[in-house]
Image 1: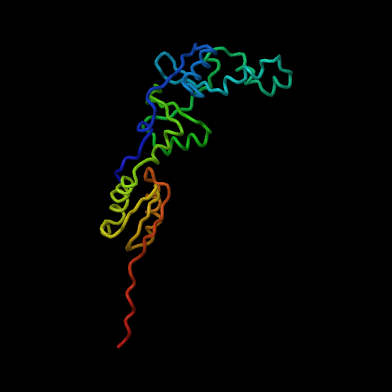
Image 2: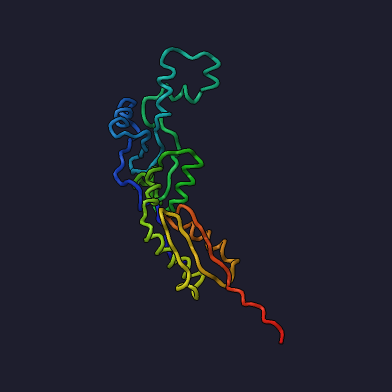
Length: 223
């Protein structure tokens, strides 16, 4: 297999609004409203991502706004109480920041978001410098890929490698992202392998691998 999977840099947004350490509370809220985002990366002087401020980091200030918390609340929500008293990005941010590299696969970014229930991730280079941001909607762009484009990759990168002698007889069709493979192959033990490889092709929604084994010859009657 020599196909390069789609990576984060293919779908990320390259124009990103970010905060410095000293950004004030009201400026942060204003920036979120203006850009219609729920979280902002915080950068150091070298544009390295050092944290993220989200709406969840800002809400404690409102939650404790109506008075001093009792002792029980102080102990139970100590981290929220600290956030409620913070006024700059450096004190409000969640650190270290959860990030992803620009050359990470979309599958890896999607797993990270799913496991951490994150809506978006700052994209960084090897030095941690901000290069963009990737959101859940960005990762879903791969499913807009043209059906024939997907089918072409399956023929080149799956069928041609697994079944080089049957390239001309195995039929690959993709409709609305669902890939169907039909034809005969010499060894049906490779069907699960083919299914797994086709499912890994970017843009594939589901796989119907209907490949059959070789045609059986009829038994000859004895003379």
